[in-house]
Image (cartoon, rainbow, N blue to C red; front, top):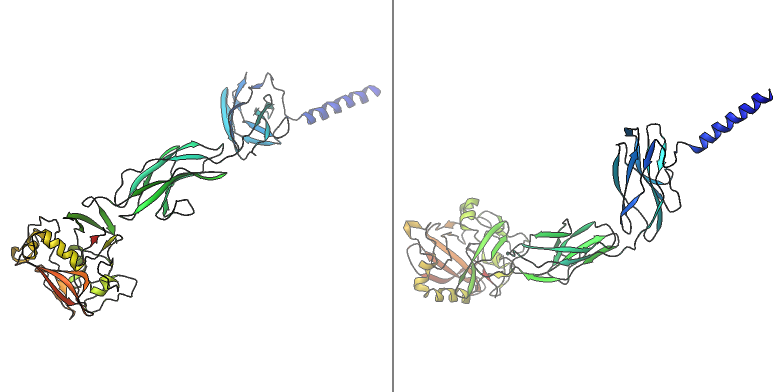
Length: 426
């Protein structure tokens, strides 16, 4: 009886010991072997580690990965990253994230076989780095147009962190930043190219590259560029319409009549106090606006200003030409008596009354909306407002006809609807 009791005690101790050990098998087991953990990259909040599985007699593993902690001998009860099952032998790599800066960690790789026995590698120690702002340089600005450009940057340091954003930001007022900018890009890569669009023509911008990590956002050096291109190269996108420019003497003109605003019927007067620009289309047909541009009453075109050279409804950095600027134009073209032929388009005029358009002004015969609300003279006459009034009720304008080379200057009631050509600010 005493012998049986001793035997039962021995068996019980064996079972308890087995449960206390759990499934872990010492490194170097004949069943599984795992190499030491290698630290491939260590940063402030993350690290890249690798290890490899070496074994004999087994074909599959049900799990493998890494365990880490701030105390020695980390195991599956510590932070761990499972990489799942694997064929063997194999090298495996992982990125550990969410680490604390300037902290010592202990790490071991592990493997688990189909019997749920776990083997750990030898312990390795590493310390994370300090977290700093990243750094970036700003590339030169290239491929500049009236409304777009190309820039970019080069990330020269990640600050020992993870880069979450990079690109360029720009502003017309003050040095740009993500909290003070007219626009920004979001790009990828350490050497990135930024496509910039939606710029305003004839405008000076400041632009800078930025890069963001966990510490915050850093900026490169600020560069300056302008979308004011030489006349002839300048293209203006305004109100979803593309306008081109032409240099005539010393003046830069748009080559097309303005077609901006919301169409109203010819029976209505335009309201310059309305924030929405209003336009007439000849015979209330929107197709005519697409061909000849809109027709505008003087107060609407000037947006209630009475100052010669006012911007009115023209794009930014352009304005409605004054009477004096119209006189400069016709004088350069040989005077009022012959300038009309040089300004008229080479087709579209009634009875073949076309011009040579050697000026590039390309005047089309858009007719007018009379002050009695009627539409008149399409294909026969072209009327253009100046920004100079002759009195409280009338303003100066210019008229070109199909049957004459003359550019006629006269004053008309402001309630007429005429075409608008814009001239660039000096």
